[in-house]
Length: 252
Image 1 (tube, helix red, strand yellow):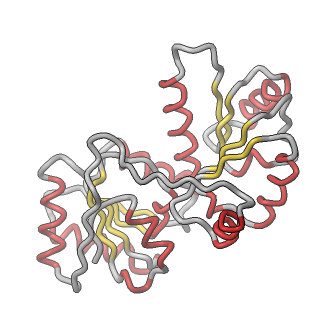
Image 2 (tube, rainbow, N blue to C red; image 1 turned 120 degrees about the horizontal axis):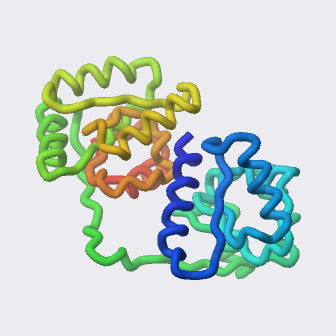
């Protein structure tokens, strides 16, 4: 799943930024074999790992920390009640920082009550352009122009089509509109390894356009994707659209 890939991307980012410091960084996700995972958890319990990055797997019973001091939760809206209850058991002597583009109502209520501090990041990173959102009716000429506008400047495109049944057909339509481009598609009902391969191939620029469901809203970090086309945007909730908007530029 994309969250597996996102955890791996976080691991690479942490490793690169902290490579000059005496900090040991490791990760837990499906990319590791059972043997590798056991070895990592053994080191974690012994205190030989300073920063551990992972998916929901880090909340498992087999995960033990020697002296956990800070818990950072990315994409908080993806965690259910059971996960929150587990996190509560860790929180007694642990500082907790939650990150989300769309705060869930409970988190928002806590912040308004003063039970939890809320900070808002309004300043974009250096050189980041503001998101430009446009609303159009379904228009194949517009879709073709938007895709070529992005690819001709060296970028890639997400085309969001939130029906698994028609995804392959939609991909074929895009291929017909842009015959000289490489088009791939992905959805959450694929086998985990196949889906991961598709996303990783897209990150490696083997595809110019990825036609997919809203699986990408979980924040896969692909800086090269600056345009996102959302088909039938009125079928999405506000939270979905807000998450998707953070990934690209155009809605339809």
